[in-house]
Image (cartoon, rainbow, N blue to C red; front, side):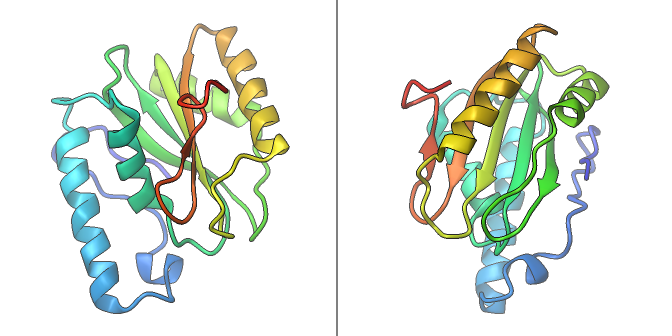
Length: 171
């Protein structure tokens, strides 16, 4: 579900937030939507790079927290770590999503990304990485290394701050 790469039109083509976070009151969904727009204005226009785990974590937490099913997303970055596209690649169930390296490589090649940051949510709220999370991160890192694309991080979003695998030395 791509975003436009034109700075003037960044419309997310995901299902409406009301369906993704149906348990939240309307005013909270509106607040989240407004915060996302502010972050998009800051990070999508090529003026700032996603240079810190904190900035990336804030952005991803708003995107993925509270979704009742697992979503695997990728932030596709240029060589200066500016966001080219934010894309939801895979959608799963309450306890997992199938991730296909071939589709990740296809999307990276399509956008000519130089680096990526992976992210997914844990609907359980527990942001600790599972062994499956660590295995798919390593597998994607190995595959993307073949085409000289850097994997900068993999964030797991749950309740609270979320987990950066790079901060833990796992990427």
